[in-house]
Length: 483
Image 1 (cartoon, rainbow, N blue to C red):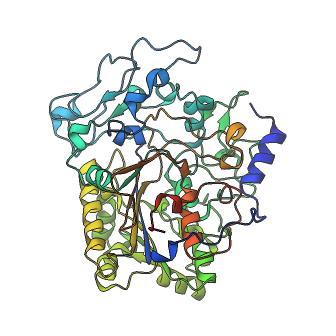
Image 2 (cartoon, rainbow, N blue to C red):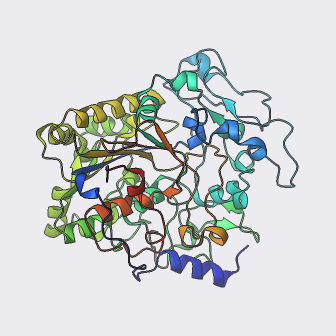
Image 3 (tube, rainbow, N blue to C red):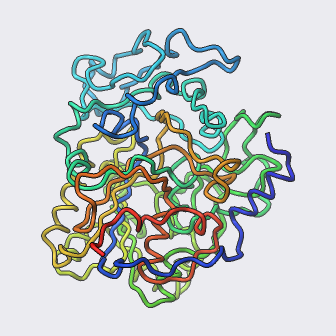
């Protein structure tokens, strides 16, 4: 375990406000990309979705790296029992009544077909996906404590078969374009933290947070209790789901994250005069006073307040005119996205967050609805005025509590490509573009920060003040511009 001094040094390094070393300001051929659209889905590890994809570094190549252990180092005889895996109201009663998956071998298993009627349209229960829990599950790169620390026990080892996914839009796009099988989530843990990381490659700061919001770890750094803020001695950072003082669901009382002031990719684009937008399903309803029916609509569609990263920043403070103007210009409802694509008025840089039921998050979404949304957006771009010059990057915020067998980059080996905050497990990522290498699996090591590097290089932006930004491989490497 790191001592306190080294922990703080690592944290300071990751969130440093000093600029990283000089970066290449453009990659040859990148100017051919007129539009970059990031489609941000939810809570699936690479093995969970593409573990059986032919030629990828999936479950078939994992060997003994899949074996799960007790804390004493002994392997489980069978996977810990999964409690009520399908107890979700949207499932039929016969699936909700399944109390356990029974004794499963200590290895990954296929979710679809595990019980009669279980398909990609079935909703599974949610699984814990939090900062210290994730770090403990990774276990220094061994990845053998996922089942030990999951509140869903053995369900963490579940994945979907090639037979179940081969006709999905995601699978077909991965076959047709470029699948990245070594792409890691930017930060350890859950959605809130990784959404923030997507826009700034930084960690949310909470100076002098309430003591009762501190997470707890033992003397070895293993999770004891997850709360919103880092454990004592690990700095003052919000790493688990925390609502914003500017936009929240009203359920976290007065303990809300103060305004964030770190430099974002939006700031850098605006400095350069490049238009950009964050489109989000349900946004227009969320930012206004709602009727009871509208409130129910937001709830039924599973709008997630903590999936709106720019809303955490002082630049978008809705209590002043400047903030409201910035909100109106850059933070938009998903209902506008289709029209902007069809008319060719889409900003050059776009990030799209589908509403909850369309994002594949276990618990409130299945795989099917989001897959249809992916197909719709890609189809719109392929038929748009930008059809010869766009890139759609389909990726996920984080692993969702599901096992992945590949060790994330570790600071002791990866240097600046890893730090106290991440990266975490692999997540599926697909590049769809006229300039994508067709029918290719790219094994290059990337993380979420690589998307920001691509945007920065394409538009010759000043680097983000993040050490990781200067260390990771740019996603520009995944394209072929025929130079």
